[in-house]
Amino acid sequence: MISLVMKTLYDTIGLNYANLRKPDFRIAQKIETALGDAKTILNVGAGTGSYEPADRQVTAIEPSFEMIQQRSAPNATVIQGSAEDIPYGDKTFDASMAVLTIHHWSDQERGVMEMRRVTRDKVVFLTYDPSFRGFWLADYFPALITLDEGQMPQIATYEEWLGAVEISPVQIPHDCSDGFLAGYWRRPAAYLDERVRAGMSCFWALGDVSEGLEKLEADVKSGAWEQRYSDLLNLKELDCGYRLVETT
Image 1 (spheres, helix red, strand yellow):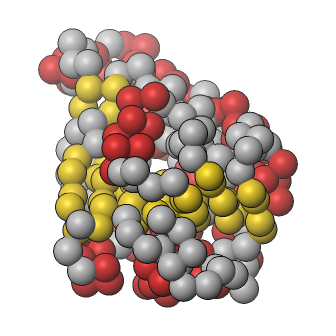
Image 2 (tube, helix red, strand yellow; image 1 turned 30 degrees about the vertical axis):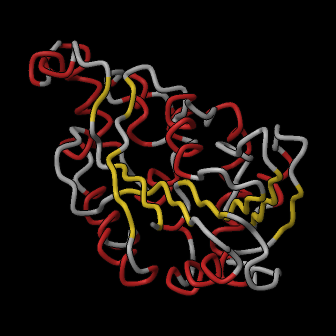
C-alpha cells in the first residue's frame, strides 16, 4: 500500500524538486562505493532518481507521481509504490538503497524488512542521526531537533533491524549541489530563499518559521552570523549528522 502521507506531501512540494535537489558527486561516490559490485539495484523512496548509479541496472520505487515525472535517469525501471510493500520476490536484487527517505515511511521497520527481503547482499541507507547536535540551523529553528527525534530512526535501530552494519559519517561539502537541509551549511542566506526551502520537507513539517527566518536574516545582514560561526568559514566540508549505513 502506498504511503498516502508521503505521496500527498511530495505531490505538493515536489513541483521543482529535481532542480533543487541535484545529486552531489562526492556523496554519490560514497553511495556507489557502499553498493560494491552489485549489478542490480533497487532504489526505495527514489524521488527523482538522485544517486542512482548510471552504470547499473536500477529499479526505482516511489510513491509520488509528481516525483516520478521529474526523473532525469532514463534507464531505470520505475514503479509507483511504497517501501512497506515492495512487489518483488525474495532476493530479487543484488543490493538496495534508500537515500534520505526513511523518515517519510509510514512503517519504517516494515520498509527496512522489505528491503532486506528482496535483496541478496548489500542494503544501504543515507540517513540522519537524530541524536546529532551541532548543526547551527537548529539555533534558529530549534523545532528541527524535536522533528528529527520524532521521525528519524536512531542509528542503533538499523542494527536491530538488519544485523551487523557499518556506519560512517558523510561529510557535507561547502558547495554541495544537493539542496537537502544541511546542503547550505556555509551559505546561510540560502535558507532565506523560499524557493530553496521548498525542497526541504522539514520546513513544510514545521509550519510557521517566520520567527527563525527573521532572526537569521537579521544576523546575516548584521554580520552576527559570520562572527558567531566564524570557525565554519574556511572549512571545505562538515559533519552535519548525516550517516551512511550499510550491511556487512
